[in-house]
Length: 114
Length: 118
Image (cartoon, rainbow over all chains, first blue to last red; front, side, top):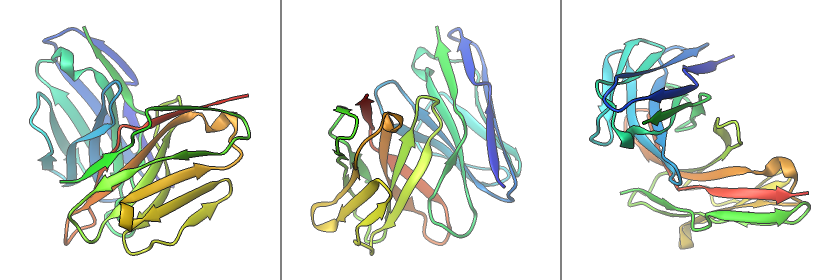
């Protein structure tokens, strides 16, 4: 069966420090991968998505970047964190074929920028 | 542009009451998908249902039921005989289909926090 795991689960970082959140998927090949952010009191916002290794699309301009160095690995990064980067980050995957748009989410990473 | 509105920020009910969560969407696409996800306190989102734009038939799954009406652009979710374990944030979402691929970008509403009291 397929599983998705992301880490760290919780992170407290000072403003201006770097960030790296990692997500891995097991049990499937060539998944579509996504990073979502859930800010307090708001819905989930799509940040990045990827249909293959090295292929990254950004939905909104921001202080963050994403990379996909391996087929089932998706990384969210920042060189210098801002206070506004605080939030709950969720990685997700969907099948490359078959059901349209059904996403499977990881456990989430809660980032607090102080 | 895709937009999903969940006007109810918070709902509180007592166990065994029925509760309906509202969802209104906007899209220019003729083909699209709608979803409901549940986010329990643990934080992980759990898929509940997917409905495509050509299928307006209502669906029932146990205590859950969904009412899709294209005429009003609504996709409402009803929980019958609610239970404490139903307490969670519920998100309605609309897909953005990338033609020629199976990429499913979802656009979420702000969510409705449902609290079921014993």
